[in-house]
Length: 181
Image 1 (tube, rainbow, N blue to C red):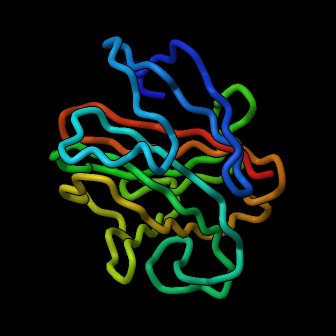
Image 2 (cartoon, rainbow, N blue to C red):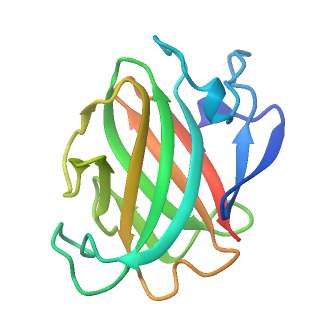
């Protein structure tokens, strides 16, 4: 997790099939908005928040491991709600992690970098990103995305933990951890 967002306390929420761990206070002392979808309606957010993350299923092949072309392997599908200030998103990554928060299981997908699979991020019918790119662009406001990542073998087993990261152009990032039930 980004060092600028150390947790003052942790709340555990159950949404759909994914248990979420949420940092409740930013390092600045500014309260982070609730994960309740009803509480996530700021018009000009200044603090980035991943307010909801839910593993949906592994029923569709929308993206390949290294390209935006389906590869015949059913993808992991997550739904994510974020609140972002008016700043460019430089990367989005999803990583399998162990109980201590360390990357594990040879399962990592990101919009930039070598050694990771491609992450597909979609909003309704629009493609936000599905290839490796230097920058994604501004995604300000409260937004809901469908995220697809190709399976690496057994990446979406029960009790598997994940971390989702949105890196921003000002050098900060916002993260969310969750576990498949």
